[in-house]
Amino acid sequence: MSNLAPPPHVAYRRASVLAATPGELVVMLYDGAMRFLHRGAVAMADGQVESAHKALRRGERIIRHLDATLDFDQGELPQRLHAIYAFCLTHLGAARLTQDVGKIEEVGELLGELRDAWSQVAAEAEQG
Image (cartoon, rainbow, N blue to C red; front, side, top):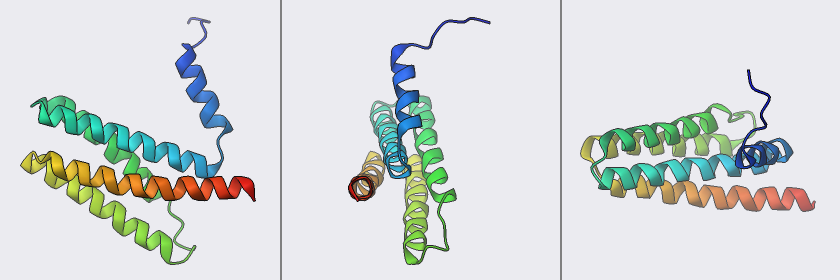
């Protein structure tokens, strides 16, 4: 077993996650999902089926995690988010079947809108 410190980018990422507020963590999850979906779309467009599959799987795992952490006792918003996440997962499945990069981009855009909303909420919570 080695006592070497992790590479600087790993240490920075770990510190960022540990110091983040719950709202910032949600934003980080959206960023990660969008990054993997983008990688998947690029790989699919290049005909790299295995790379596309792996990247899309990682993005889907993040979407499933976001869905699994919804608190349905918090009113109507969690129900709406659940429906959006279900749509995203279904749309990504259809993208895989039809090799339609556009469907992946649509999901990425939708997640981008949610990410921006969460970012605003997180910033307001930090100020207030």
